[in-house]
Length: 107
Image (cartoon, rainbow, N blue to C red):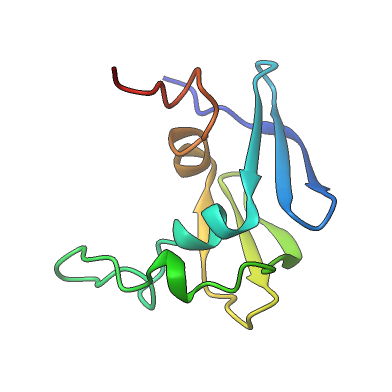
């Protein structure tokens, strides 16, 4: 199985980040959604896997101040709230893509 790689990563105004994947799929992640899905030890308890950050504690106007490639497998995002320890693997980003094709609504 080959990992999907992004061909473009761009901001969408001040509210979201857009990834165009090499297979042509497009993912648009609202900034709050990205911050909420951070997998670092400050946000996810490393022993229990419990989520330590809640959506209501994330500033609604949060935005990435930098997005930096980490090797060929991830990006590091530093947010306007000062949080910068999260590394988002491409596998994770594809898994949490919020589009209706990737996250169909259960009926």
